[in-house]
Length: 180
Ligand code: FNR
Image (cartoon, rainbow, N blue to C red):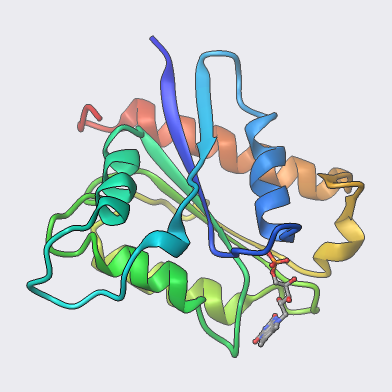
């Protein structure tokens, strides 16, 4: 049986380093994993309690529900999680779409600190959402522009760290009592 894993990029930029990392992660999974990157974070309206799910919100929730696990890779803006990503995650609070779901959280930044503040903030949100994580479920990638060439991750240490994230996620899925 194929295992569906969903990638969510916190960046909307066409040549986003975070989206490049997700694409590279997709190539590290074994054959029985179907990995897709969510398209349409920019089609999700501003969250407010009581609003009905729009098509854009339904598409996001469906993608999460059909995935056995999720990998989020995000930049840091002004020391925080991009509003687009936080907004999308806020829509899942009431319906618990990420509850018990294995999730890996990655931040990537061209700066030395690797988007560590956004990552810490994202992890708090993922805890509030009840995600299934362990001590290895987070990764911060500093100086990211030096680790990518021609639209691919080329730095061996980064590739190894991404492989470890894939392996850890598959382990969490295997151990999980929930059948997604
Ligand atoms: C940034 N960037 C940034 N980086 C960081 O590590 N901490 C930060 O607080 C910020 N703040 C910030 C604000 C604004 C307005 C911009 C435009 C940029 C740099 C950011 O990490 C960089 O642009 C990344 O390349 C964005 O990620 P993607 O689009 O390449 O995935």
